[in-house]
Length: 131
Image (cartoon, rainbow, N blue to C red; front, top):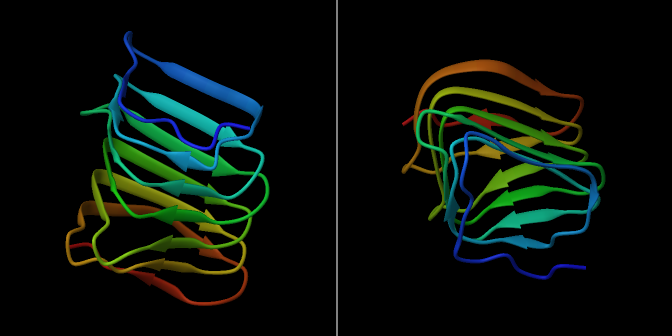
């Protein structure tokens, strides 16, 4: 299990961590594009920046919690449970797609989201603050 992943710069146009990763906390790093599929709940604690690239986070079990910031041309969030954001968190994106089984609460006033694409939850709240 990786309890934290901090201070990384991923080089190249795309970085993909698919299948059954076991990352608890995601720290600050930059990449051209980034995709992570995690086998458990995931907390974004640092600033993750893909510039104008795509940033995709998926949990097979548990929540996606945003305590830091996510920056990308397109940000895709797929949570097996909830997608949540602390008041200090931020999503900066041209396009946000989010699917969460038991609720979406992305209400930070630091958000700067131009467009919302997919916005789907089966139960629970469905709240997104664009800016």
